[in-house]
Image 1: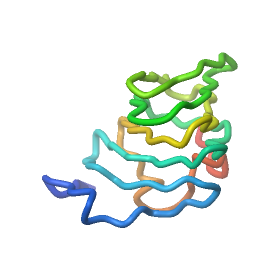
Image 2 (image 1 turned 120 degrees about the horizontal axis):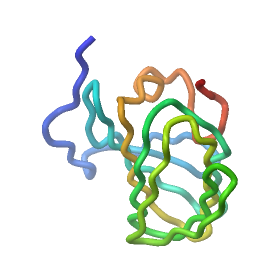
Image 3 (image 1 turned 60 degrees about the vertical axis):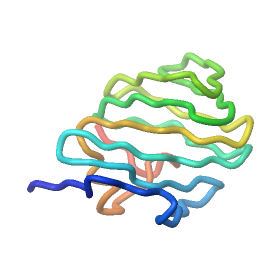
Length: 126
C-alpha cells in the first residue's frame, strides 16, 4: 500500500503525541521507504533497549543523551549523529532535556498504526 505524508509538515501547527514516560513525538514526513520523526525527551526519560529491522539514523538537535548500541555506550550531545544497523539492540537515556530527529528506512508502519511504541521496548521485531 502506498503511504506518504503531506509535502510540508509545519510543526508549530501540530500537537506533540504523548507517549508517556517523558517522551513525545511529531512525524516529520514519510513514504513507504523512509520516515523522519522528531522525538522530545524530558530529563531522565528513557528509550528502553529494543531492536527492529529498520535502519535508523538519529540527529541530536538539542540536549544530551547516553546511547547504548549493541552493548557499547556513548554520550551524544546537540549536533552529534547516531547510526543504528538493523536488528541491533539499542536504547538511550536523556541526561539533559532534548530533541532527537530519528530517520528510519523503511517506514515504521508500527508507528503509523499505533501497534507499539518501541521507545519503551514493548514492541520488539525480529
